[in-house]
Amino acid sequence: MKILDTLREKLNPAQPEIHGSEGSAATTKPWRRYNVAYKEVEIVNRGINLLVDSASQINIDIGDKLPFAGGSLLRVNKVRQLLNHRPNPYQDISTFRRNIYLDLITEGNMFIYFDGTHLYHLPAQNVEIVTDKKTYINHYKYEQKKFQPSEIIHIKENSSNSIFRGDSRLSSASRTLVTLSKMHDFQDNFFTNGAVPGLVIKSPNTLSAKVKERFLETWKRKFNPRTGGRRPLILDGGLELESLNQNTFKELDFEEAVKAHELRILKALGVPPILLDSGNNANINPNLRLFYLNTVIPMVRKLVAGLERFFSYDMEMITQNVEALRPELKDEAQYYTALVNNGIMTGAEARVRLRLPELQDPELDSVRIPANVSGSATGVSGQEGGAPKKPKPNSKEIYD
Image (cartoon, rainbow, N blue to C red):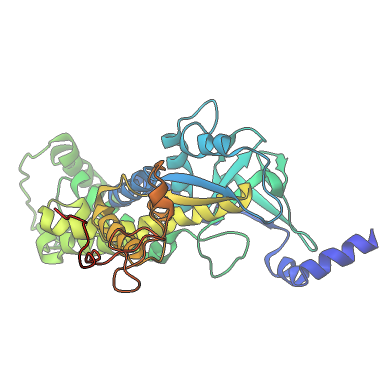
């Protein structure tokens, strides 16, 4: 046992210090408010849904088996089915992906359980990571059930305070979320009160508590905005009515303040605001492409890297079906065409890089030799190219 402990310490010498600084368990409970914000705050819901739905459309291509140790023993077709079609008997791939991406955004973590045959989503807010001084992570716990690290695919966002768990990308906008929530509460209370500001009733005389209470009851009964009461009141005895606040929503710049806070939230999510507003295609298309390149693709790449390590297969994202990225695919095709024409790679290799189906053409397996190097206008290795040879004098060769 001592030999095994010594080996573990050599493999992970910093683990005792890490375990001491972060404790024996890591949980997401402090971050549950972002899940609530997704349900209750419109701009958060719309921004996250756009990001989740966009990422869920991207399939994953499975390549060759990787040489490093570990990984499952599943065949490539089974892995492809799990990741692109049917992760388990109860969910389609779209629902499964939306669940795990939603967790990654709101909780900063996604947890996928592999039982040897199927993949299952474990809600991140209920998953506890039990750490160990020698083994980094001892096990995962979900609803009192333990899972070994070899059974869990754990993808996490960036974090400044933990190596076990990631932070929600909304954490940078936490103060903005609190303020925006208070602004919405203020707005709700204002209209619940019939859009009537606070009032004060002045009296030149000193009134007893009983008289004050009776007057307030009469006021509530005859002038109650929530019940539609709008009967005029006659104030006598020197009573005067005065508003505590004469500022309107426009004077408070309330709408602009809400828009500013919503903009900060969208920035934290990496969502261009124009994608949620009406606009012309000239403005939307370039922003949509940047959205994929700067936000969607990096998030999907995190999942692909984790799956690649877990299953030990080379994997890449399939983006040909993403309309916003098609101009880039065109540029990529031109790039590989130049490489083929300059003899740097074969046509078959270029088709593999472009994720195109294989063609049974022997010439695609040959390297083209540029005409200005050793002359191959035909472009096939071993064949002479350039201009046709001139016939020798007195030759009977005839050229059309």
